[in-house]
Structure formats: structure tokens, C-alpha cells
Image (cartoon, rainbow over all chains, first blue to last red; front, top):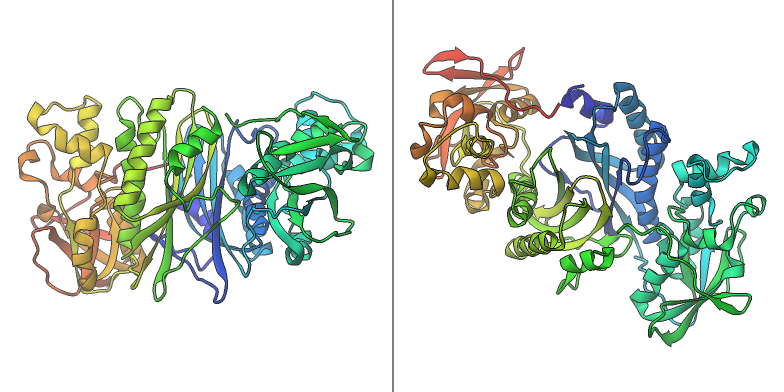
Length: 300
Length: 300
């Protein structure tokens, strides 16, 4: 395939794609413009034998979308860089582009530009811009409640099923595998949370690492009550607390609030203390007894 | 090296780097915000055995900066994504980060965020934002002059020297090798050009391909007088017109103007005709006789 044909896959019916040296950003009045970027690299973040092109496109879009909504924003534009390896067929790219543009449309995000090149491995790098009326950082206030949306542990379970590390009944496989291959940013619940939250981030490296990051920003120790961590009922035989604590790529929202909230879509799992961190950013308690969970997957 | 230590290499003394889910863009009043992105991938865009880390950092910065100034802008912020392979040492990263931050400082650009991950090959992906009072696109007006800054052919000559395809005297090697390893965006001349230009782009894929792209945007045929293409005097024995026409990664500015300009920093090489393109976006004439140059390196 020629570069021009590849670009056309992503630009048909997109009148805002100029393929210029730079793209102009349209800034919404009375809004704060925000930006994020996240890459997916073959054999680092995904395996082509596991990932259908449609799901890979969704994942690329949603890992970035998740950052945007974690900051209290809505998406507006994106730039896509693709390094195409020899094993990528025309059909794969066609399906990938169709699925990617579908997500763009669904979330009112314009693909304004990007770059394509030949590469030894398949490389996907997305920059996504958005806007917000009120930027939500990761900086929590002392004496706040700590919440997480949805359930944890499903992405790691999906990975283990695909990697043949665990056997689970056939009828239960679909949910965790989909969570791993095509996670969805929690746009459905974000708006409900925004008015009450003081700090927010998404769970991408696992609760242990992400809560630690959140704690370090404000400098106040977090307390997490491990028995409260939400694990979907029908998967409790396959996800223990340890797995739920380290499962990354969950894209659930971890947030704090001064308010004592009750909602079926999120769970109160802990507390931002008023104690400044000395050595331990997060204290994990399981039924009142302190535990020291593993960190889970680390990039380095 | 741990992820945190790598991030610290790029964030020391940078108070605007928050390592948050998103970064906030500061938009300058009465300016148009613009954005671009460009990746450099090991064994696709560079070879580690040729490229000192300092030059690689400069190249990554300048290929993006070149897009920003080609659009009539100045840089303001960037997001850096790095995939680090096992062969990358701590010392390499230290030198790379130091050189990168030096360029940021020199061009008043803030590194506001990014992403690091482990990878099989060294991957560098930069998103750069800037601002302009007047956006300059690639769309040329008919009956304009066509100009190019500096000289062409040096980057390809540098590549050939490094690749041992050509022998040139020792005292002449430095200039073309530096042009290839660490090209500089033409910020020095851009401001002089802006008041007069109607369309502009940088020469990154070689004049043949880039002029073709420019012609396709407006739909008017370009005429290029090949004998006018600037080749630096002392390299004329090693750069013929064919090389100068296809040499990519030059990062010289290709621009049009209604005005008949005279300046030592750029050369009038052709004309935007008032003929709509039929089959041939660019017509190349060498001493009045039409020639059909090769396209040069294609990404696919």
C-alpha cells in the first residue's frame, strides 16, 4: 500500500484533515484546552495474534479518552501516528481505520492529522486534545473519601485467559477478554462524578501503582481497605484481592471526594488521611490488618 | 533504570511538568494555536551506531520545530513519548535528555508531559504545539514565484558518506554529516519570509515529492527550473541535480510569493502556473528541456 492510500483510509469524508505541516486547534471559548498522548506498541502493549484490528483501534482511542475524562474533560481532536510493519495487511488497516473513525465519530473527536511510516513492528501513537470547564488533577485533599468506579481485576483475568495461564468456564470468558482487548473509558459515569470530585485519575498501571502516584502528588497518605475493592460477583472465583490490586489497563476511575457518596457505579475503597507521607504513600488494610501487596507489572 | 528516574531526567527544574493524566494548554491571546507530530524510529529514521544521543535529540526537536515554523508559527509546548530498548544506556538517556531540554530552552518550548515504556527498538515520538498570528498553509496561489531556502542535497550526501557509498575529502565531511544527523529548522530566516509568503512547507521528503504535495493542494501546476536549484558551491562535485531533487530531511523552507524577492538566504527556483493540474503536478525543466526526475525515497 502507498502512503497516500493509507492516509486516505483515515481521511475519507473528513474535511478537517488537511495533511498540512501543522494543524490548527480550534479552542472553545470559556474552556480550558487539555492534551494527552499514549502509544500502543506491538509486543509491548498488544499482540497481533490476540488483537482484532477493530478492538486495537478502540483500545488506542479509549486509553487516551480515559486520560481526557480523568481530567474532567471531553475529547475534541486527535493526531494519529502509525508505524506499519510488513505483517500488516491492507484488510487489517481497513478494519482498523473504520473502527477508529467510528470511535472518533461516537465521541465527537476530529482526526486532524498525523504521520505514517514503515516500521519493523506495528506502532500506534495517539495524541488527543480536549477541553474542560474545570480541570481535575490527581492532587487529593486530606480527609477525603477514595472511590473507584466499576470492578477491578477483569483486565488481568482476560490477559491470563488469552495467555492460557488460567481456565475458566467458556460462558464467562467474553467479559474479561473484552475488558483486556477493548477497554472502555468510563464516559458513562464521569459526568455524574465531576461535581463531587477533588482529584481523579484512571487505573492504568494497577491500583497499587496508581494509588501510590496519586498519594505522592498531594503528599498525604492514602488508606485502602482491601476487602472493599469491587470484584464482579461471578468472577470472584478467578480474581483474588491480589489480582484486583495489580490489574492494570482497567481504565476505571480512581477519585476522591469530601462527600460521602453512594452510587451503584462506584465503590468507596478508602480514605485520604491528613498524615503526610513518610515512607509509605499508601497503607493497605485487609480486615483491619496491614498487608503489603506486590506492585504488579512495571514498565521498566 | 526505573520509569521514575527516566522521567526525572526530563523534568528536573521543569515546574510545568505535572505527570498528570492530561496537561493543560496555555493559549496565547489573539494567536492561533497549532500542533504537529513526528516520530523518529530506530532503523527506520535513524541508526544508533551513527547517531550520538545529543544529535538525535536535536533532530527530533527540529523536525517538529520545522513543521511549526513552516506554518508561520513559534513553538510553545511539546509532549515526548519514548520507547526504550535494552541497548539504550543510562548515559545515552542522560545525554539525550540534556540535549533535548537545551533545545526546549533555546526555543522557549515547555516539555509539558509524555510517556515512557519499554520497547524492542528505540522509539521517539514528539507532539509539538505552537502559535501563530497568521497560519501559512501549503496552498499556493497561481502566478506566484516558488522559492527554497539554503541549499539542497546535503542531507543525502551526509547519508551516503555515513553509509560509505561515496568518498569525499576529510575536510568536507562535517557539513553534510551534520546536516543529516542534526538538521536545523530554519528559524533564522522564517521571520524574514513570513510577510511575503502565501504558501509554505518544509523539504522533508525531497523536493520532487514535496513540490508535488504542494501542487496537489491548490491544484495548480508548479514549474521548477532545475538548473536554479541551489547546491552549495564546494559540494558541487558530489551533489548533482538528481541528488538535490530527491534529498529528503533537508528542512529547508519551500515557499511561494507573489513578490519577486531577492535575498541571499533563498533562491527563486520556479513558478506556480495558472494551469490546473491534469496528470502532472510539477513540471521540471533543465535548461528549457523537460526532465522526469526520480521520486527518491518513499516511506512505503
